[in-house]
Length: 195
Image (cartoon, rainbow, N blue to C red):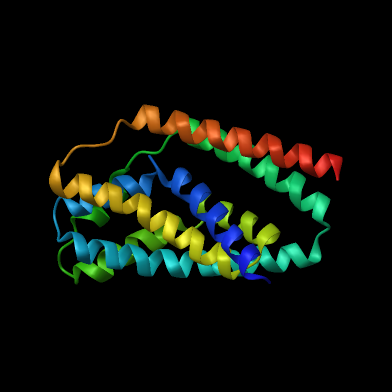
């Protein structure tokens, strides 16, 4: 893998995962945690949990990428991104279990936040998106880009939660993210069908 392709997969993964994370349930969790605990501890825990989740997803995605023809990967990725568009449009909210995880104080804050984020991200659209991206673009750039993109998006939530205690305009963010997933999905399907 060349430095240019590594950089390209980093940038694509960063951008897609950053947008996917905006308005996501875990971003709402980050705000809730940041309203109660120190921002640096929250960011460290999010980074640790995200790095593990995305490492697992990119290894699985890259393994599937070797075993499946490129055209099929492109069409499948496009369909997945169209699904992410619908999922994002629908939106996420914190349920009672998420709120309970956010309010625990009997364990160290770091492990509580890391555990909550790890569990919240298993099977989430950002995990599935990074898996899809790794099938097309390789492991290292996708892993680092996906992790950095998610941490950057959650850092915004931590900053907002710590300083303002309010949410970002969730509807506008959700619509923007859904629109971008829709565009990426259509482009990938068209690319796969043409290839």
